[in-house]
Length: 142
Image (cartoon, rainbow, N blue to C red):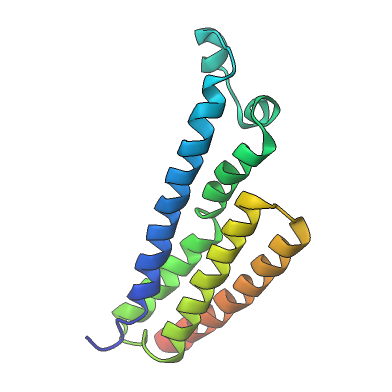
């Protein structure tokens, strides 16, 4: 269908988000099992407390999973809008794939080595790509 190519990177980023979910739980559950908490302590757990109790390398995956529910939500909205108005092919689809690639790289950096400046560079680049997609969306709907 015309203008629907942009939905491929949408699906890819959704799949990647679930990959991060699995990675988070396969690392977090064993680490959580090593700490001893009473049921009352478990009921009062906060993110800050988890950051204290669990190794940073375990929490990096959880933090990235949360990040995949922030700026990418704007990507989903603009990509679906582009598909609806039939403007999701060509440069829009290429930008969509670039956005997904940058977000996957961001995830891999955060979940493994967590170098903040590398993460920031990838985030900034992905934000510029997202801004370009927003511009295309605005041109398509106004």
